Amino acid sequence: MKSEKSRIYSALAPLYDTLMKDVDYEMWADFIDEVIQTHHPNPTQILELACGTGAISLHLSEYEEYELTATDQSPAMVERARQKAAELEAPVQFDTMDFTDIKSSASFDIIFSVFDSVNYLHTSEDILKMLRGCHRILNPNGLLIYDFSTPQNSLEAVDYLNNEEGSFGNYRYFRESKYDPELQFHYNEFDIEEMSDDGLTVINRFREVHKQRIYSLQEMLSIVEQTPYHLVAKYEGFDLVDADENSTRITMVLQCQKQRL
Ligand SMILES: C[S@@+](CC[C@H](N)C(=O)[O-])C[C@H]1O[C@@H](n2cnc3c(N)ncnc32)[C@H](O)[C@@H]1O
Image (cartoon, rainbow, N blue to C red):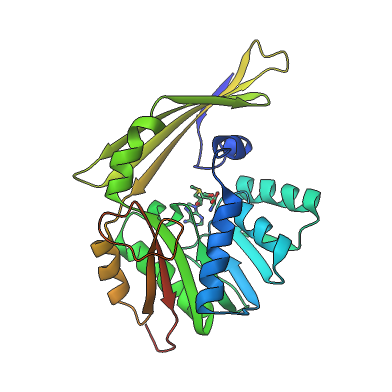
């Protein structure tokens, strides 16, 4: 039996949609669309960063005429997204890309990223790299939309995320979750087992340790202030309601002002 420490979102990729089965991605895609239509109606080219298995872009492709490209660092997540797109005959282009090293010959009206993905960036320098990369490929007045989770969210969520278990097909997983409020790091540790077809024997074990830096609103605003983006809005949850320090998930809407960063 092999036992290995995997890069994040590799061994977890076949289980990801099971892990997220209670997430209302359709509502989330509607919210992103509402933000787009409120602040930049009728965009053409849209890029999603850290798309995972593609749920948001696949939903958007069902009811909007956007030209959608969706990217993620993990080849296994992108592969799963491509399979889903093929099954749905959805016109979304999926590619692998690290959002701290954005490379694209195309330019975009909208770039977005959802569901804590930006919390995988552990320093303000990494966030600045992401912001600068997006700035280079956004059209003038284009929008960068991304959410992040806050200390309030980790304090509320850590207990119900801890000791979670589940299974899908030949895989089963166990998750431990812990939050360090002083350093503002949230850890989710997944033990994943691949079972034989008869379900009696473990044939592979994997371990993924997910470490996320949790940002307060003030910290995120200080980072954004170092860039020429114009802050259009900061929304709480999934409504067009202004966020504050008590918000658990904040969606930033930044407008690209074209000058050198
Ligand atoms: C919590 S998942 C969210 C996925 C997707 N946005 C969703 O809503 O289901 C975080 C995603 O961020 C991706 N990710 C983490 N670091 C990344 C990086 N540096 N560049 C691109 N994607 C990254 C992971 O591969 C993973 O798919």
